[in-house]
View 1 (cartoon, helix red, strand yellow):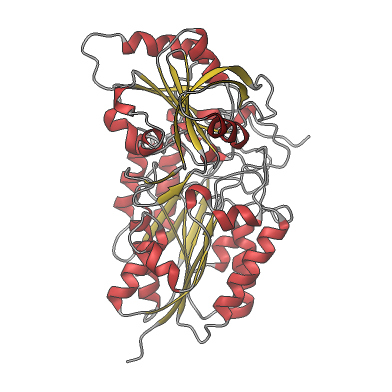
View 2 (tube, helix red, strand yellow):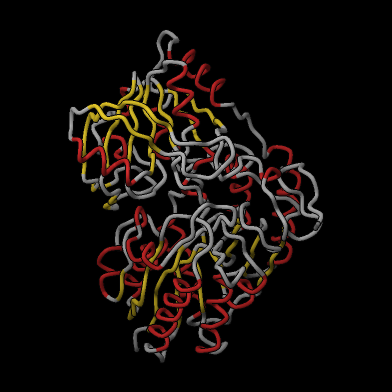
Length: 498
């Protein structure tokens, strides 16, 4: 029997259309915290054992005896729109590489599901539509998506199965790839499954989507119950910062009684709407509370604060200064990372370890209330920014943060980097000489992914809203193009076009 010939590839971007900077071709080529662009056999060699959906597909394919045909794989940090140049070059090359592998028995793609380009609202749907034109309707296409996918009607129509992560922090990316590969395996010998899609009537803030806590934990437990050996299901909580009509939460079901299963899941989601809210602190109040908690007798581990509105994992640039100002003003002891400012990092390296240097850092977001922070800093430690991540989210990846430094002002240490990636791994502190477990307060520019590696060491977790591009409350964003009537945030106002 001839081994099934399966093309694999990936093209991932999460787009915040309100973000300050766009994703260029060079961003995908370099990759930053996502790893550089790869082609052919290098994809299998590099992605075999990392936390990525394509890793799960590779491992399943090898065990099942597939003839894997790797094409192109790339990703970069969330940002504003993917440029037309980047999209057309990457999408064009990927489709050409897949077409060159014909005849094929199937295609597996690792996509995000929330890509907006300068010229297409639905980057993934456009990619799949073009691919279908080349492959026809018979070849099965399975796509693995991020839990934050804004699944569109075109994506649902053009792919045979869309399989999404079930954890946030996303520690199950490889496991999701395994599920997707198994779904593709079934279609090699059986008819394509019946499918159903449902759309929720509200959006939720990403800060309250963590699957370690309710309501998401219970909803994903239900999703697992409704899934099974013959039914694939996904609950996509969506990415609530993409201003187009299909920014939305969705349920997908594939297999027997798909409609009934999708209805049950959506009913539970709608009932849980009031629970998608949480406590948010101002920078000053949050730091003051963190100082109080850190001083409690018997405290075990640092108080960890999410600087959620400057999360580069949601399209911000990781360079706002609100939390730095609050820590310095209150004389708090701790560390903050990552602050993305390549020019400042270059100056720190020129000055050298042990030097005192007066300069401005951060504050380039363009957001009201944010500005550069100027002071005299001690350059405490320098690094080339290259290290291997050890936490569950970035697990096993060799990250390159570019020229990096630890700046110290008073009792505050600042992780200064030259490449964007959200602070979701303890090694990001250690690469500039900071031991995170030894700090009373840690501030991380991340919304939820940090929990995978920092929750086990934290005495308390808090969320602060300093000025930044990724509003913790979706209702605060200047929406113009959502579908009419969707509630902007849990129990939020209904969107009405201007």
